[in-house]
Length: 195
Image 1 (tube, rainbow, N blue to C red):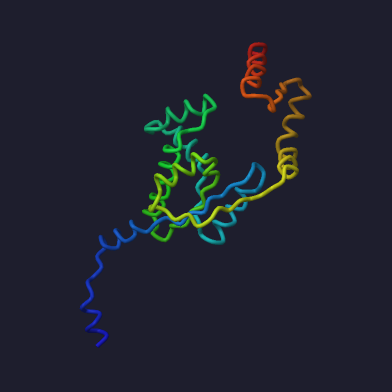
Image 2: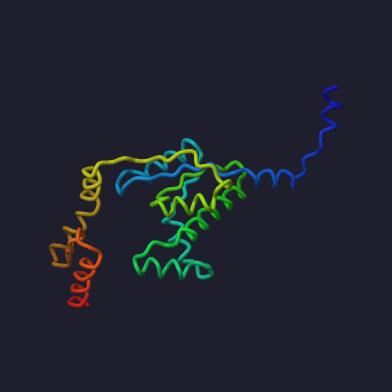
């Protein structure tokens, strides 16, 4: 009887299986936290233990701007060169493409850690506008870290480099707590003097 019942079920072709896989939505965890909070390290461990794919918005933008045939490369380059934030539509397009490519290569890879995104309200609204119904955001993993830890991480990794160059008189300090224009005025002074 079971055999007869199974024979009445429609056969699933490879094309049908592919279309089912296409409608599977990515399962997303946003990963946020300050520099030095350990996002990258923890993401590596999550990938190993839970099988997620780690996507860094910053890495995707940097990789895209290096591609000679990229439709976004020059635009990304100009935004970064001018110190502006790349339009959210471009970032989301790159994230969406990376998720789709990953899922196309391996139908079991549908869980994603998105590192460093969304950074602000505009990013979140853009995500909701573009990805609504196309991906399920499960939760935001926020690595909360007090300023002391961030400073300590900075001191351990970056400060030795600064100290080394300071001994040779090659460090030019700028007070970055001022306004953007005030900081750039100081930067211009340095470049005007130093070339």
